[in-house]
Length: 47
Image (cartoon, rainbow, N blue to C red; front, top):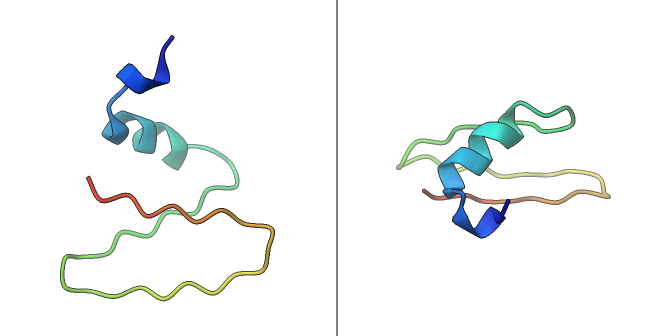
């Protein structure tokens, strides 16, 4: 399986189901500030 062929929206849907993943949906005019203790990886997906 080549991950480059999988649409980003499908990857995000799968990640949302995983343990250790927090999901926050932000509207188009909203702002989110993230403060966390590491280690952490923060992905911003605009799709």
